[in-house]
Length: 318
Image (cartoon, rainbow, N blue to C red; front, top):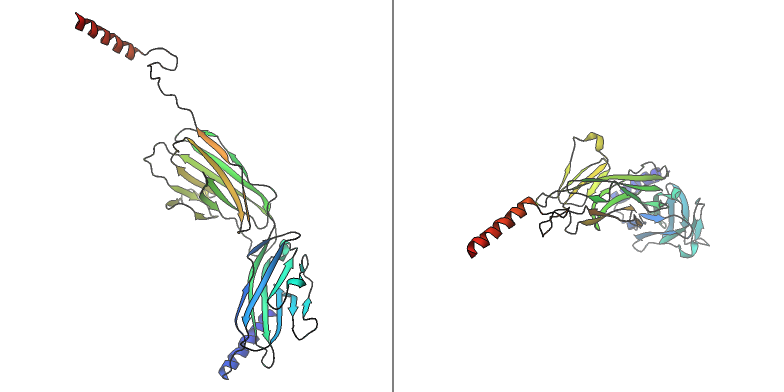
């Protein structure tokens, strides 16, 4: 129905232009939030702007997909009309010829929202614009992080898992190393709006380099990754069995300690961090400055050196 109306409008415009007419409806644009949270008290304000070039307004119509839910006709009394929108309601007190406010949305109201503007007689010029809106059901809990070990020696590989409860849409996962983003796994998004909640999961392999002169780099292999936060990275095509593992290499910090965490995000309206995990270097065992080893005995080498020095002093005295 909507597609047929658009085709008719385009044909009518072409004929009118060929006849030398001047349009009375121009610069139609729509402003719809990309995402809003679901639940009671949550709302979305959808706006439509246009230029009628002095012509009178005939009607404003709002659609979710192809179903009309709000209409504004200034010549009628009252000028506003609301149609059922299952799972939400229109706030008439804050809706008019420029905007409509929807409250108490649920995720099944995600989809394309359309604004149709029509000028008044005699030409009834009409145009339609649309934009997507996602109603977000966030995860109930914070991300859960587990690591294979909480202490390391240089050359170790630390493995970590980050898991997120089900949500709509599935969250993205960002890995955080000492408050710095190192990589992000982007979750698969359904194209047919099945409204199904999905969890998210990401694996990290963190390699601790043995010496600082090695070059720090990032290696990841994942069909779901499309963002990295380093200037240099390698896509390893040979490791087909590990395509969902993020790999990162780092120089151990001077303090010997760092923190690892992950963050779940959904668009720009939801972000929640895991509890950070502190990872420390194993305590080194340096030799004693007194020449004693870990058992407290003097080494043979130091004993010989002491004997030689004593003999030299005696010979000098004679």
